[in-house]
Length: 180
Image (cartoon, rainbow, N blue to C red):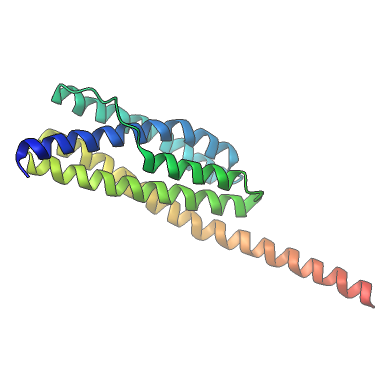
């Protein structure tokens, strides 16, 4: 592929990420409202602010390229957000809902990590060192968010499971009393 062809692909991939990030700006407040854990809600709110910064970085890249960021719909992010919406409507409560939200959020993070890794590599090949630094900054933030979500998942999953076991034991106790 010639440099011109790679540059066109690079711009197309950037447009995809730009649309993905803007979809996420709309979805994160809904996820924050659905979270029962204050810590998880805070993580979603913090990531919303980071995501707004990701949009601004992408806008800087488009400005430097003399290109418009508009014109592409990220179907991958659209699907991930749709799955996240299904989770929120799935009837889960408390810690189980939080665990489901973390799963949905991590799918999004992994998608973004893949996308930013790809465009950063293209920017390197195209000699766009300014772009590389902006994309690397976003990529590192996405990785950090994924790590924070993994840490939260360990805590939240344990609590959700403990509550479920507690409820099961209470139910078992009620059945035992009825039999006796």
